[in-house]
Image (cartoon, rainbow, N blue to C red; front, top):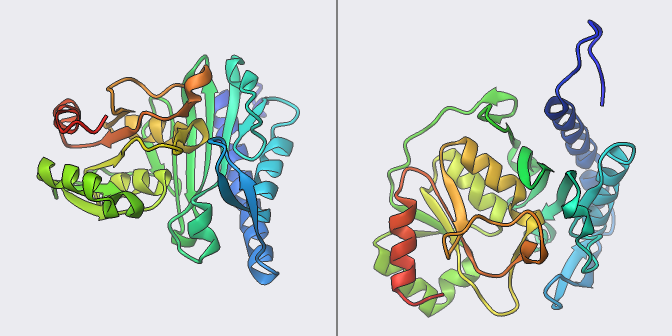
Length: 278
């Protein structure tokens, strides 16, 4: 994708991350314009066939991402998804969730993000989760750790026994009882990427999403989070214990997920499975 003035080749990961930063910077202007305008919230049918919300910001940021990589790498995104996942079979592709947490964004909450990830041969190699309203951008390059706003993110102890759960699932008596019986304290965090950021900040030790009819965690939701958690010494998996997929039909993932750090992932999985929630 480019060379340094010395003639040395710039690593592709660095170039991809630079373009992710370009998308994030321009996204701030897109968001400002939307907030200064009519703030339209539209209806769409999501990957689960259910009615959902979308804004002009979602559409415009995904379009911006496609334009940014148009000359180099194919892009797979939520708003362009039409039950056709051929892009994820490519040797290298970009995943974008232009707004993870559109409902939260539309109602003025700060619990949403712009999520970008590069995947090579089915493995995430560059990730960015940008939370503009919090002034936080978490990034990672495979095997190089996690950075927050460009600086190495220092590990902080989070032995607080907290687990991030979606507000809707906390209110469900069955899921709420499942969490209570693990001995962990449920903390309300909305979308997937804000949950991952809560782990990176040290606010929680883990995060969970239980399987539910008509719900999923699609590739665009979890791609960046997988690399960030791994690079910070944690783990994220299906509630069945399998790695989350980056290829194939199961990228619209419906089996729930668990992310952990500084807590025994296998033990927590076993506890959740023993409660009969799968």
